[in-house]
Length: 191
Image (tube, rainbow, N blue to C red; front, side):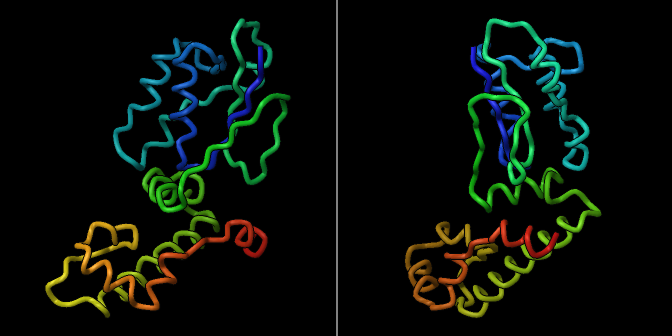
């Protein structure tokens, strides 16, 4: 049997992958709540509203998983791979998703960076809002009055091809297309 260490950053789908692996019955994790895995998953995903999402999460207990005697691979679950270290030997799975999708889901879920009251939430959310505002200002400055709205650079591909070409031809558009948020630099500078 193998040990697996599953790490993810909030908003990238960690629980979804964990639950899919557990439902395959090839992996094992122990939860403090004594219920069948399908009941735990059903309760976990019973999300009434986004602001309550985190309250429905049911976490596995890595210590109890380590003590369990099973004939399947054990999976240990970690959030926040920035400081990724594990207590258990085994293979590592680190989930990655594109920056914009993760940011939107993390914001919607109030996960990771978006826990209200945290300095990380305040700074990162401010950066994200400022980026979107700069995009909208840029697009509105170059668009013709009959062009459709384009609230995010991610929606550029939804525009008609002739409008896409004109927007891309603008030299400042390159800034938005090549934008990268330097997470490591942020943590070193801001925390």
